[in-house]
Image (cartoon, rainbow, N blue to C red):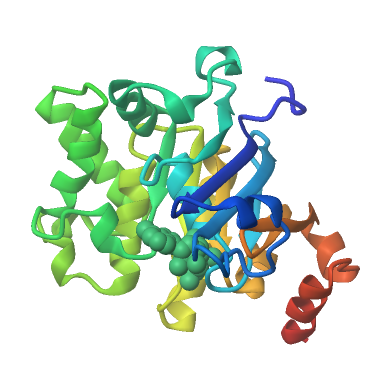
Length: 278
Ligand SMILES: Nc1ncnc2c1ncn2[C@@H]1O[C@H](COP(=O)(O)OP(=O)(O)OP(=O)(O)O)[C@@H](O)[C@H]1O
């Protein structure tokens, strides 16, 4: 695959909560993304992006800026209002995958994309064993051989430093950092080329946070997975991402190489974010 061909591309993606009205359709520059007349929330507005093979694309912005909604839309947890998204490995990148059948969506979730949520309860079945959580993902991709699934689950959990003797333990009894590591192993179980990560270290202790971020980076280097990393924390984005998009009120207000954005932020909001790092 050519480095210049994105593995995933979003075009004019908009997600709105509410019906919208004449006023907000005409005043699409609304500062905070909420219509003062009909109270519709324009959570994601006309977002375009490219995710290139093997890169980490960071998405940063304040709470409510639309970061999670964008990721949820790409993973079919939230329908898009309009716009399209393409995957180079799906129907030659010619089909808007946001609008395919639920069977096709399941295929994409099980083969081409993995998701790691801030809240492990969304990504894991807390009362199944950790091994069964990973195996569930393997089964969803058509795997039926018990022996090979157990071996693969063990391998994946070892990879994220969950000891084999804890394979039968429920994530419920794990620490927050361990739960995130089980989620990561489940999300990469079927070798997807794309991993979506939504505030995966928010709420963890700083040392645990650093360990999980290190793990994600090492997985990215080793497996060459392209990742979209959402965080409200620019320090996390600085540590993780090659390129960064800055969101505000549902819009992308700035994007570019992370180093460049940190050194020379152009948008006023990004300048405030960067100065808070110093
Ligand atoms: N299901 C929903 N119904 C109505 N409004 C929603 C829904 N989900 C999100 N929103 C609104 O959409 C906007 C964007 O939310 P989103 O969660 O994407 O922001 P965010 O940048 O990820 O912030 P946070 O990090 O706090 O989750 C917010 O105003 C939020 O209240």
